Length: 212
Image 1 (cartoon, rainbow, N blue to C red):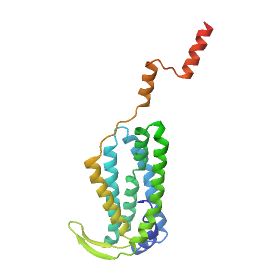
Image 2: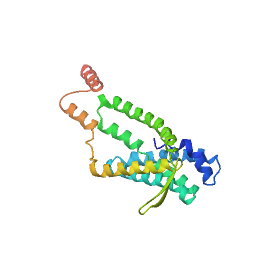
Image 3: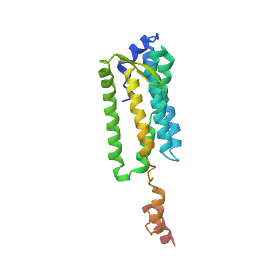
């Protein structure tokens, strides 16, 4: 959802901030480009656990969306670009796929991965729809610490997604526990130790005995 929620209003937002309409494509592309680099970081980081990468991801997403929404307040093109880049850096897809690979059994992995892809496709549809829905709002209010909030179709996606990721981060910190990973190498070693021989090794052993 977060990747595509800015699509319908990105051109109008960029023009409002004084940028060229063509920059809207660059604005949308910032997120997947940044996500490409963060995927490498998360693939290494998740070797030691999932909790810290997920918390970092949520913090980046909440902050990035808040920057995106705050760009109108400060009339800053830089804010929207940096905000979308941070959203890409915080994208947890790589973490989620690693979680599925390390915690699901071989038998259930296909169905779990299919469900994950289906949820991603649903998000692609919900994102633009949410942006269109937020076009019906246009009001100004004030929040403690943050100050004035101008909520409309351009800033709404940023504020809504920032709030969603903030709630997600709180739940994550309070409830997430490191899962028990499935060690397939250790399981294979135990099977071999119990006298189970793989077909390849068994065939090799039979050939050696026949040669003797």
